[in-house]
Length: 554
Image 1 (cartoon, rainbow, N blue to C red):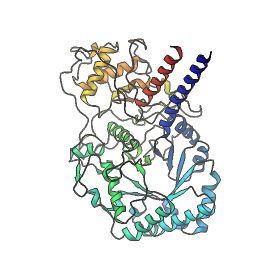
Image 2: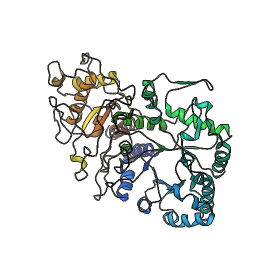
Image 3: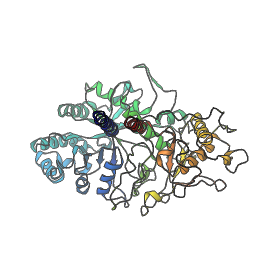
Image 4: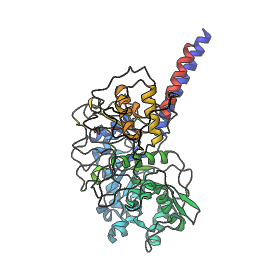
């Protein structure tokens, strides 16, 4: 009896540890989103707040106003909120009474139930070249800080975001400096204020705007993909991604003024998935690659060459595609469609079993977690299926100004996006290779599906209806989707060691029509073959549970 009680107690502790592991993983990130509302088809704020809390690892949002409906909706969620003062309102807030009036109307009614943690005073004010705004930005920041102190809201920070346009130069990073004339008159006093109030210097780095259509290397450099790097002779550092270089350029400029101890926050960064044909580097694949790789990079805690071992608080732009923005690319920066289905997966979705209220559309959880995947299951020792031609690799550069968009999966346009009137479980979905997946990884996927999983792959054999185009990528797309459909359209079964991507657009040809997750493709029973690894933290959870079962019964 004592042994049984001890076993039960140990089993409970192990289960508790497994559960805590998942919760700690979800909370040990610093990834937020910019929640814009320039659209006429977005779900209500209450639905958005519930979705973010129950379906994603996102634990912070930045809004571009002080919308009371949004602030009210996030009450009790634990999700931190950064609110924004409109640029036009800055001059009127340069005195303490005006700042106190603004605070009592826009912030105080929602504290502490809503976790307002920061007030962003305007956005990219210095770059606006509006001398009135520039002259009033620091006085407004000081007045708002004083108003917060008088109201005993001492945990709310005050700052303002900047683009990299505040730098006189940014290459190499070690030589970067603030704009002459503004360095000591604006940025010195501002950084001194931020240091004294323990608030961050906020920046909006966009590697997307740094790619050169005529230089193929810059796209890979911007997307965190393999490249030769950019050498900084001043620090003997070879930068392998543009994000680090941009962050270190800001850091170097701050250091030149003696403020390298002030924290940096990434207020905006992102990549459009759809744009005009002349826009270099705009594609569904590139957007997924940039944001997905950015999240992994930030959450790795590696920091940058000049700021090692740091995890930057980062807000991706943006939460939704916003259909009322002026240009095609501006309308397509979102991670999610208005019906809460992902535009592409970047590893911020969790717990598919959770649900949002019936007042809003249900989400589709993305398959892959943020952490690195575990090793795939062993495949047959028989040599894998070989495709005769080399695949088209992930694009090495953005198109020239006169060329078509980068090839690859077509991004969702509003007309292609799933209808918000139907439930997410019935939407048609397909599994496709990610744009940055290597030929070796895709060949391994083919080998697993066609040799070890029980899926029939005759269609991509020589003479089969899906043999052409005869590339590894094309054949992998067929095999990965076949496995995904045979698994019942479970999003986790499109992970494939983080090389798979869920899409809502059928990219197959008429001759080789792919089944979809709504209709399915049951070529095997779910238990006839093991699922491809679902990623590191899910695997550890299942290992915990398996060990628990073994421990309890044996």
